Figure 1 (cartoon, rainbow, N blue to C red):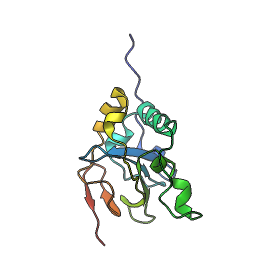
Figure 2: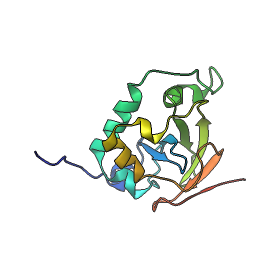
Figure 3: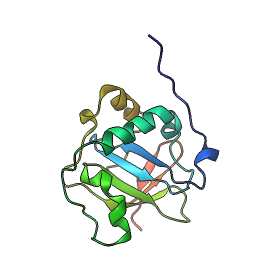
Figure 4: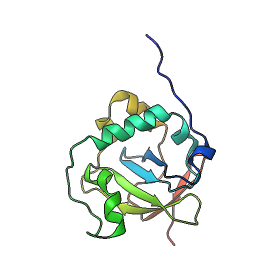
Length: 150
């Protein structure tokens, strides 16, 4: 059996374009991050275009389990599809490298153990050292992160 191919992405490829990536927290909760052209994402998020795409497809094809938590009719409402399927959603704050704001938090978060084994292994490399659900996060390219309280 042939080993799966993993095409790494480069920071140059994601600079200035919409790039969504995923991470987990110490409780195993999952979030989708919308980088909006910011290339300050964890290196592990760039490791495999194929696994990133498989994660998108797996989450995007799950049934919606809850209503959107963002205000109806607002800009954030169109970003909430992952939240309706159990994932936290964070969007990059323009002009602040590595800073994300919480767009939507699921009432019943999906956990890493719900994912297929190969995606669990991939997402396990993207574990942030902060709890998802904080209003603002600062995430560095080495995968370290902190909650911002300003």
